[in-house]
Structures are given as structure tokens and as C-alpha cells.
Length: 137
Length: 137
Image (cartoon, rainbow over all chains, first blue to last red; front, side):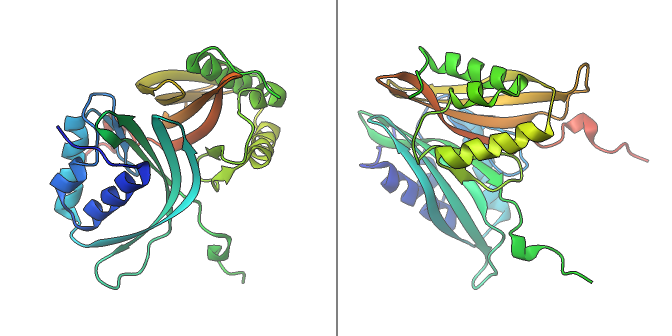
């Protein structure tokens, strides 16, 4: 079984590193086992359970090769055994790629005797920034 | 200060009841106090902190009068002091209104000595169902 991480933040760092590396094994090592874990990627059906989560990331990694993600924290809710991080992800595709409009993510971590592991990831589109409104006539 | 609820589910029921009633006081009684609570409504900026959460719902209630919400559970993650519910919301506006396409929501609850209270709510659009694909030629 996967080893957990010492803190929710360590699990989060490993999660985004694995996405940047398109490394499915490294990515799945950040997720907890179990049928109750969930993942909601933009405009895709929500999936629950380790098998479905793994298949979704496998498909994503097969279509994206290089990606750079900058994560900024907006809010942390942490208790002894569960942590919820609201973050903003800025994603750029390819080397020197232009960053896409940021998207929100909520990452949920749970602590077992193994340590902290990811149990939920949800993306939401962020609204276009005010300065991207169409110019006037 | 607000009294909490006996279970995360009781807080969730009260939350959706308050939305159906457009009752801001009842709604804010389901949210915990604090600067770390967060709310992400569809295509709106994420807001954090009780004041901003309240202002957002006040604005929403001023533009929507009658709404009916059917909630189905997809996954529950619960520990002693925190609970995360992944649900699908089917919303219908007005009496006998047609249900809109369902949207996903993650609701986060935290337990204090007061009981369980809502600390996070995030909506994500669900992809269109397969049977809504445009018909072939």
C-alpha cells in the first residue's frame, strides 16, 4: 500500500510535481486507496474510487506532455485527520508556454496511520478577470 | 455565535432548505464563523471569510426568488472533526420549473464544540450528458 506524507502540504507538492512530470505512478502514490476518493476535472464527469481516478489521469497524461503549474493558496482548513486546501492553479503548456486563465481547485487530504494522502480533487473554472472584458467601441 | 448541528448531514439539509427558502439568516446559521470559510459559485470569483460569503448569498437571493434543489450523494469522506460530501445538485427555478442540467458540489463541514457547521461550498459544472449530444445527420 502507498506510504502517506508527513503533512497535507507535502502530499500537495508531490501531487503537482507528478502532474508536471506526467508520472502516473508518482501521481497515484499521492492518492489514498479506497472507493470514496473523488476527482472532478474541468468539464469531465466526476469520478470516484481509485480505479476510475487512475484511468482518468492516465487518459489526461496521454494527451498532455509538458505542463507547468503555479499554485497559490487561498484558504486552508485543517483538523487533526483531514485538511482542505482552496488554491488557484495557473497552468502553462509546453516550455515557455503562455499561462492559461487560472482555475480554482479544492484538494482534500486525509490522515491515516500511514500519513497524509489525497482523497479529493475538484477544479472549477474561475471567471474571466475584469481586465479581460472586451474593449469598448 | 451560531449553534452547530448534530451531524454534517443535518447541516447540509439546513443549508439546502435555506437556499430553497431564500432565507439569508437561516443560511448563514449553517456556515461557521471565521476568515477561512470559502464559497465558489459557478463562474463567480471564489470568496473567503464570513462577510464575503454572506454578501455573495445576499446578492444571489436578491436575483432568484423560487428554487427547488434535489441533492444526490456521490461520495462521503468523514473523520471525527471534518466531513466532505460530493453531491450532484439538480436545480429547478420557479414552481414546476424545468430542472437545469445538474451541477456538482463539494460541501465541507467542520465540527467544533458547538457542533457541525459548513466551512466550504464549491460548485463545478457537470459535462452535458451523452444523450444531449447533437443528433447525427
